[in-house]
Length: 197
Image 1 (cartoon, helix red, strand yellow):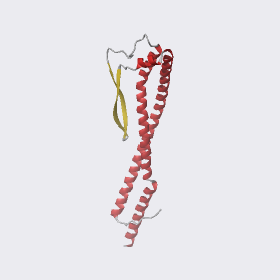
Image 2 (cartoon, rainbow, N blue to C red; image 1 turned 90 degrees about the vertical axis):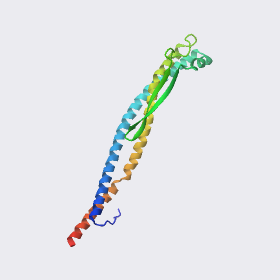
Image 3 (cartoon, rainbow, N blue to C red; image 1 turned 30 degrees about the vertical axis):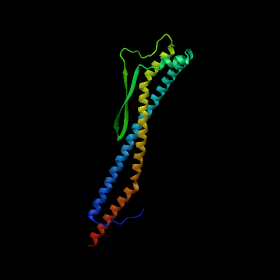
Image 4 (cartoon, helix red, strand yellow; image 1 turned 180 degrees about the vertical axis):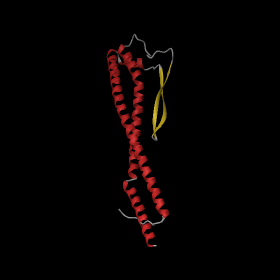
């Protein structure tokens, strides 16, 4: 490690001490932020895994109901039955701030006629499997949106963890050690100077 020339004045000594203190505080803050982000990230990963398994199971059940319904109905009748929806669905997206990470918060906004049914077709020309499939898909939509929100949150948190890790490595131990050495060198020179005067 190269030694830097430091003039042994009290002003330089105080400046070096302030820089060292700032460097140590900055490093500690970044390390604490990284640890907290990792803790929240691990919690989100566990929740994401359980929610993903639930959603995949419910979606596979709904798709199997659709498959059964399509076996009993012609493709034209199936298309005619589901081509006119009775609900208009939108998504409201808000942004929350967690540890300086802007994460989305999503909610469905459903516009539905009070008198209308969830089904846009008559029961006489369709099978019961189609009814079960549409009910299942309607129930899984909230979980699917929550899963999308969690996926995006984990992605943003992973990016923030990576950038915080890079910032932590920019304030390495060596630079703090170098400042300690500069302070020690300055104090030693001041002592020598006062001893010989």
